[in-house]
Length: 148
Image (tube, rainbow, N blue to C red; front, top):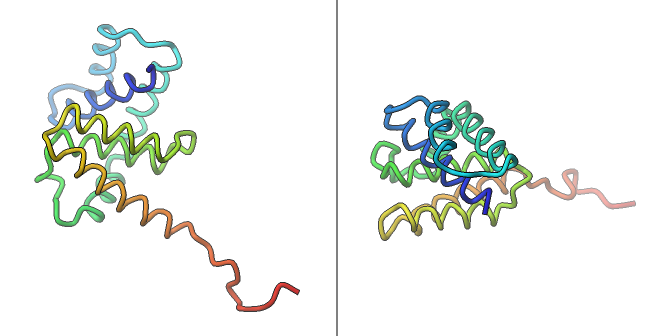
């Protein structure tokens, strides 16, 4: 439960940061004052927020590329920030299984978004995952030779 709550709090921070209402360190501090997290969950929250915001330009570029029919500005703020958090985890957190990232993102989209948010988030993440997997696939035999 600690990481799930930390992810939700990270989503709140990204959402507030996106709308320009508050600096992310202030948002983290305020949320931690109102929510009880284990020390490990606090560390996780601080890491994912700081890293996701530091890599926001790259993450947004990936989202622009793989959600071509949905420009970032046209996405619901909720969906956009859930996707940012999930893409960050997919690309930079090898300690988190892909299935966990997708499940958590879809559940947050259902909880905080509209009736189509879960499907939208799942679809965009599926496209990103397929593209990333294709990029890391290496052919078994590049030269066409034998195994002798």
